[in-house]
Image 1: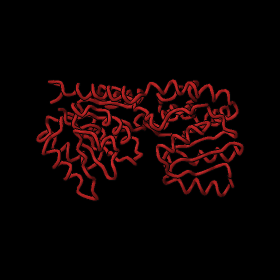
Image 2: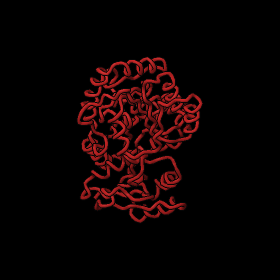
Image 3: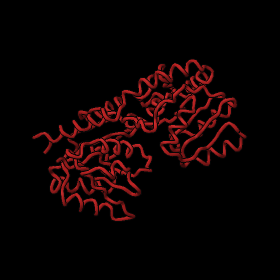
Image 4: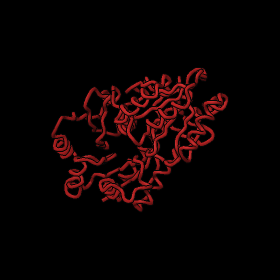
Length: 351
């Protein structure tokens, strides 16, 4: 049996995109073939809690690195999947040549900004250099990583969780149209840009799903300008997000820094046209077919007005989005990961 360790969390209530992806992969790996160890802080996903050949390591307030390393030393994993950039990885790689020399590292790159950064974070460079396989979560990011680190890369997209993200029985034509923002309110996500768009479009409803450090700035802008067409939903569950997407008319994603945002694929699966920037070249959105990928803010505004004014275009893009989203099936994605894991364990693949 292949022993796989990942420093990811199995928590059912967790909404971190990286942890969500790993949970879907682990839930589908054959327990007769893979023994998986991962962390949890609160109640784990029931699929993983009930999965045979699974070890869930409790994450404590302190001492997690020592506890994790001790656990790994008792039975070293064959594969360390998806290393991050924290103390646990520092300890693991310090011991890699002596105590974990037979553990193959599979590095998954999901971070944006590498194409414009002068240099990559040192921990990321180490994770890539030590890897038996390097995988990006979209074609553009894989190309950037290959060029930046001079390594061979593969692409495995994140899948879409069909339990929550699926189209409505009938296409929704909300009047007035509903524009949805879904994500953390961090500066680079540009929630403030979203509410500014609402200020000049009073006939559309603008809904914000998410919280973060720019929450107060967004609320202050809305209060100062007296915008009754903006609603703050706060932090919502995956089930609620799917419902919001099926009720919305447009997903507006003005973020300037991304790897390959899962929210774009989730929106597509719900039949929601997407409006985003093209600087991170997302594979979840086909420009002009399932939404628009704008070159700059001026085009973002132009395309937003076009979509708000044209219900027929929104319906056409909605149907095409649902078709496109079928490509990102978690069963197919997991099959690619399984093959990657088997490949890195081939004799001679790593030292």
